[in-house]
Structures are given as structure tokens and as C-alpha cells.
Length: 102
Image (cartoon, rainbow, N blue to C red; front, top):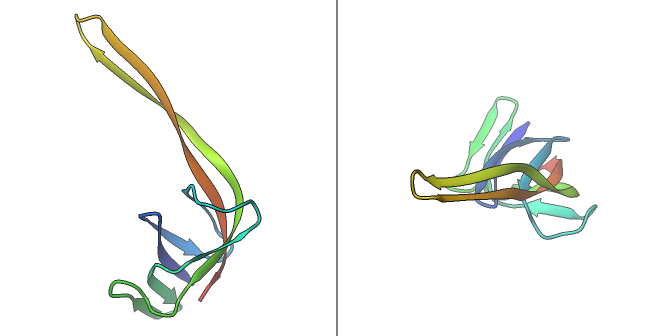
């Protein structure tokens, strides 16, 4: 069984007991979260597609930790002009374990 869920504007294919790294969300470590924007649910041979959302289906999970992604280097340069700027960025994510679909 799996579902496709919209979390923070990004679509994730989730299954039970799976870990995902979603965009940073409110909540403390160990707290429970519910995702109600379910786009598709597949259970065996039965596939239920929403238009745009599937009614009555929610995905619950537990926040495991808040983490940072890998550093991305942003380097800008204009040749022969003496212009060079180097910046770095680390995106923040929330590690969520999917507990239940339904």
C-alpha cells in the first residue's frame, strides 16, 4: 500500500514505516503530524485517484528530527570585471516516519 501526498508543495510517494525528508515544518521531535492532501491511494489492485484530492484519507507520521541538507555553493563571476561572489546555502528539512495510511 502506498499513497502520493502533497507536503509543502512537493509530492511524495509514501508507504508505511518509510522515512521522508519533507520541507521544514512546525512541531517538536516526537510529535505526530497528519497530512490530509492525499492525491492517490493504492491498496493491492485497488487504485483511488483524487480529483484533486482523495476524500476521507489521511496519512499520519511522526517527526523524528529536524536536519539540514548538503551545502550548495552559489558562485557568481563576471569575467574581466573583478566581480566574484561566493555564497553557501543549507536547506532545512524535517525527517518524518510514515506510520499509517488511511
